[in-house]
Image 1 (cartoon, rainbow, N blue to C red):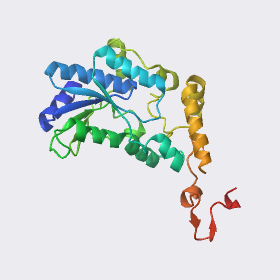
Image 2 (tube, rainbow, N blue to C red):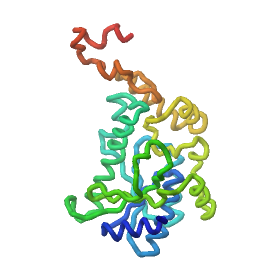
Image 3 (cartoon, rainbow, N blue to C red):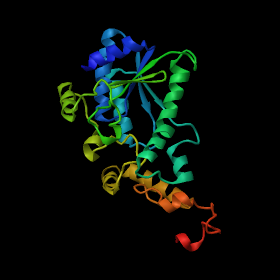
Image 4 (cartoon, rainbow, N blue to C red):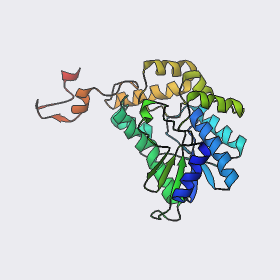
Length: 270
């Protein structure tokens, strides 16, 4: 199905009261936002561009998405994790999450999903428990990455949220051609280090990615390093690209090790 058909069918099938165009700052979401806005403007359907602040973002990416929304006249709403639930709070208490799919799922829920859910329930719906659907338009592509290969269809209903991916069938070349054909400004972060920089939680990251951030975006690297120092102060010594060892998962600092009958602060972990 073509992007316009995907969006129109989702609206026809689920009768949403509003559309949120999810704009992370990457090129895929830039294309899906621009494309969806054009379609929704044409049919007169109300929408808002939404950005989930992960609290660990490269500044240049945040500047890029704000500039793009201003350029195209899109209403932008940014929402962040609640106090006590930011990335800094998580790292201070638990250390860096580590490069695993499980950690990625936890970070997504803590840093993005909860704030999005609150925004929909308390700011979009007429009341939190109202039986009103909201269409969420994202830049997910079927062939984009292993992380998102779980998406089998362009439209998926999840409670009152209608996840819709108008670019679901796009290849990378289609994204590149769309940006070029519509003379859309590119994100320098994506072009420089290969990621949007919207979320530096460390899940699926590696030493090479960290080195690129240090070289090209030292301000973001300094933030990671400061968080590392904070984590070390709280006994979580592993680096942003690593995550806790299996031993540290089983026997967290200051937790009694019942099988050995001694405290985890002893020399056995030195």
